[in-house]
Length: 106
Image 1 (tube, one colour):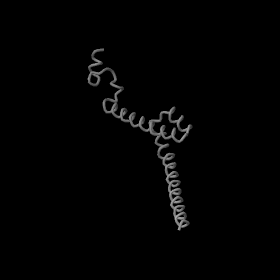
Image 2: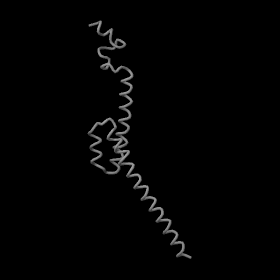
Image 3: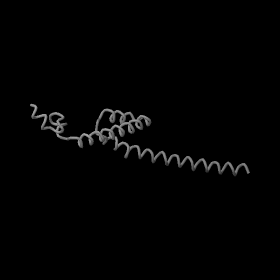
């Protein structure tokens, strides 16, 4: 049995993380950090926008960031464009109204 341990990577035990080594562990750690960041960001936006279906799906399903990226790229981006157009329209309307008010006071 001692021979088995001495032959494994750096003498750290059998099947040092099933053969993935330090590079594999680093990759998994980076993937986990990115996945957690994406999940937090997308859950925050889904909650803020009162999208219960998206919130529950992203909370329960672990897709290593894939579902979160779909939400951020396709759903959130589309919403941002709509809000931007709405804001632009309201800003244009307000400046148009101000122009008419200015004329009526003259």
